[in-house]
Image 1: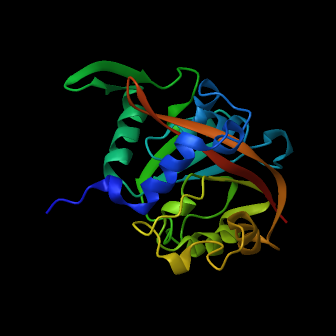
Image 2: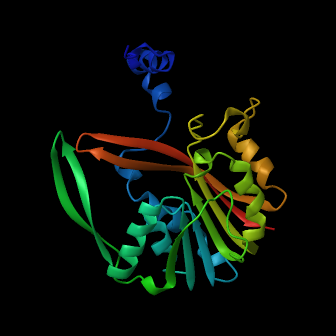
Image 3: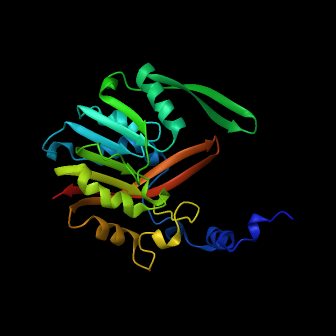
Length: 248
């Protein structure tokens, strides 16, 4: 017998809030939907304070997806590596590197879709960028060190987020910057409850700090919204907690 998803307690609680909670409780942010566009670019432009990075030789984008942040890093850094667990994402990123463009399909509604072409900005040196598949929890030992490392909206999608946190001090040069974003959407489909940061009732960000200090000092934290289009009238909207760290 098919289970009715609307009989779940999770949806019951969501709809009680949806129907009855005041707006300041439902959405406690002074943000708009359009401010959430351009998230991958902002992870670089807003996430890093490039003027304060001592060297700008190498950068690493962990969980790079199809590579927009990786390409943006190439505006500043001489060599940039993007790593993602999805072969399909890495293949698309490599196609963008080689061709500068890639076809994309936007779902409109039902069976309707629109074909578009996406491009890498011509001013970006694509030859500075390389992409490879890899597991953020088990990164290659020969990666070396980097002057900047990004890991955006990744931590709460890992089975062992602590494994990545443990590796980060070996990846970032002293004085280099680490930029993280996460909406802390903990789901057992991705991460067993015992591996959630703050599982014991501690705030997830405080648990993240515990995992990074004393190797990193917190430089800035702020909200960074993101928007993923599903179709012409439905979007995933999230507010990631962004944080910049300096390797001490």
